[in-house]
Image 1 (cartoon, rainbow, N blue to C red):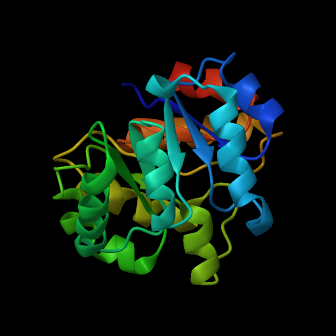
Image 2: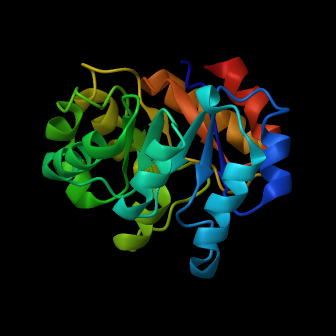
Length: 216
C-alpha cells in the first residue's frame, strides 16, 4: 500500500465518507476520534458499517481500545493509534487484537506528544504490527503551548527526529495542514517534508490529495 495521501474523514458524516471513495487518496482513514463528537461515536460505527466501504483502502483511527472489536469484526486491515507513547501500549493492543481479529491488523502510531517522541525508537521497533508511523503536530503543539507559524519552522526539529529514528521502517506520514484553503501553503509544506524524508501527508480536504500524490 502507498501512503502518499492519507485522507482523514469524520466517521459520522456519511456524505463525506461516500465522496472519499470517489477520490484518488492512497489511504482513507475513517475517524472515531477527535473529529467525531462524543455523543456520535456509536452512530459513526453504524454509518461506517452501512456505507459498505472498500476495506482494502481503509484504516480506522480509533478513539480508545474499546473500538478494536469494531475494527476486527468488520475486518479493517489497520488502525491509526492516537497519542502513541510507549511500546507497552502497542503490546497491550496487540494482545487485544489477537483475541478477536480475523486478519492481522496493522498499527500506525500517531506521534503527537513529547512522551511519544521520546520513545520513538522503541515504538518503531514493534515490527509485529508497525510498518510506518505518522506525525501529529497539532496536539503536540497545543500540549507544549507552541505557536506554529506559516513556515512551520517551530516543528522542523520534531520532523527531523521522526525521520531519523524511523529509518528502519517505511518513510513516515507527515502531519496535516489545517488551512485547507491555502493550497499553495500545503504544497510548500509537502515539498519541505519530502526533502526531509517523509513519504506522504495526512490530508483533511479533497483538494489536497492530488498535490500530495504529485509530490510524494
